[in-house]
Figure 1 (cartoon, rainbow, N blue to C red):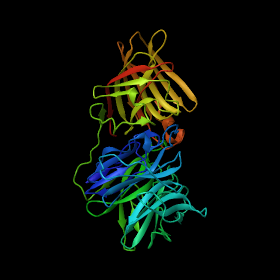
Figure 2 (tube, rainbow, N blue to C red):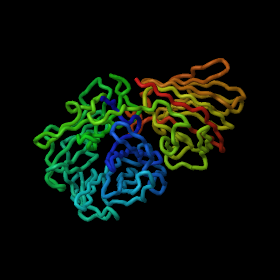
Figure 3 (cartoon, one colour):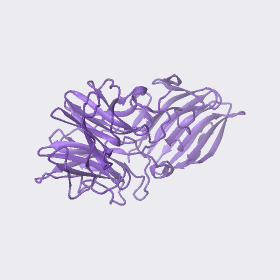
Figure 4 (cartoon, helix red, strand yellow):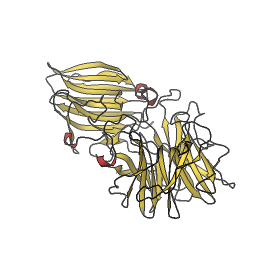
Length: 498
């Protein structure tokens, strides 16, 4: 049976995976969004269901004033002696920490902070010892993958931090994971930057302390030389054993908007590639070292499923939806029939927490419908990359009437592209069509469906905006001078798989 990459679609970067009790569990980065660290479950490595988040309380993660692409970086999940551990970095406060749970569907612990610098932390357990590693510099100032032993219950260091590998020569060595497989310890990492030069590299040793010998044919997995191929940016891999005993790698990548249009705006996504160990103890990955869109799997006969329709009724607000930083909960009333948002003076342009709730955009092609009613101020739908890059379709109260506006925000250029008067009507029905290249904005009126304008997707891409996130389809409310109330009904996002 074949499956299609990516297996988790949209902005879910830096995947890490573990197995426990016959199932698989996966976590991803969440940056400035809350709740933090999305948590997924699977029985076959192909079909994944989000079951919650690891960071659900504001006191677990400091996000106040965190700029876009700050906050939670590259988590790692591991299972040891009946307990799940997740370690990650708050890149803004420059703190590495661990949280744990004995119940995967329940709450996670308060943070246990680790006195080691760098980002992208990971854990390795063996013979009662707990090893903590990250990319950074050791006490002698040597940069690379840095490791120490810790007390897993307190976070106290039991050995000095020591650099154990400096990579294969690529820039931005990061994302380390350590494994013991037969006779060797394998250290898998990422190099090249999480962009078009990204790659997975690795080394091995007979000791967890090294010295580590680099794989002679590094990188073991990369799409950096595949011009004209949609899947790019492959890297940051984590090994896992499939139900049939074969090895696979969960890793990130992204889909560029066209064969020769080198922009991506959906964010970094989750891909699955095969791994094969050879008689000499080295392993290879992917299809001739690259990640393919379609791959045959020998270990499942269950069809791969993609959800193509998202509404208030078939989504879970605390799982599928997200907020910008820590939300003011009193401003949100969420139900299957409607969402009511109370907007304040915090706007989408602020490094703060506007009244905003969103879904990750999962495919290039979709149609969004929504009816919005306001009493004053502004409310609408935004395609949000960051505080400086977003497209808004909104209904606003002007002194003389209510109007529909299309606003394009690209860096320091903020332009009202279109306005349409609703007269004294405070309600609007919106339609947005998305393709790989552009968003098209419409409003329904007594004169039919009015096309208001378009915005090119490339200006919401990582190549233009920078950073590490992807587009979020957000519902928002805002009032510069007071508090407004906005009602959102009949929301539907329907994806068209290409």
